[in-house]
Image (cartoon, rainbow, N blue to C red; front, side, top):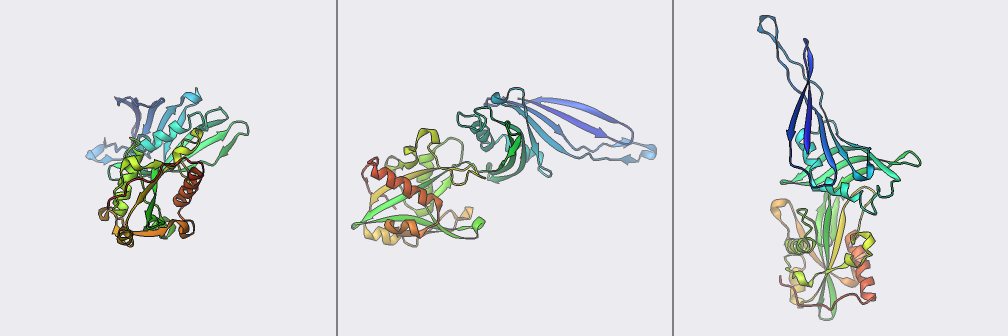
Length: 327
């Protein structure tokens, strides 16, 4: 990937355009990258009596990509006003943005049949979770070629996530493990399945699911006992569920764990306080009879998991419950 900087310098005496070319590592993606950056610069010009006058130019950050499916139609990536150069670079180099570009070029992607075209992407903001990009906000200008009209393209990117439906058999009754957390975006406490985002782009969905359950409930599950409920979906779906595809790219893998526990374990779990306090997690565990789960929570993950579990059970796709979990 070659990075081209064109820096505009101005003063009361002259204006010049100076090119600067530097090499960056070649991207692994199947598209070409080319930066065009107009950077602010302070220019000091010696005047009479050694007085200096400084002029600051406005800033515009742009980036151009060429997609194989849009030969001859380069896509402009533009930074919103106020977005720093470092945040702009972090955004376009993030796995979230690269995955979105990959998605639109797949067999079922919006550019697949040539009916749509991507003209421009406006990067609005980046939220960092430590050293990695947690959330990315942008607007994609996608056009319907036949009608010549733009389709809605506001995107909140957060990437893949996992959730686990835990069913614990105890003395003839089946219980579900839920977590109660403060969810600021909806302004309320929510009862939901143990869940979490993938911490990297390595795709360890099962490992993430097990880790999130242990962090949020204190229950340790064995990897080999996990059943991927979303794997029962038709391959054309990508074997993920999309809770809000109209505005968010989040795709969730839903897992099932079935085990046997004593009544004492059920009692110990009820009301248990967990979560990573250093990350602001304030979590309380709730144990709910499975028969009442569909009415006890408004969590979309839980309701989707119920539907997949019941359909898979009806068609005989589920393995029998295995060993009891440790807590």
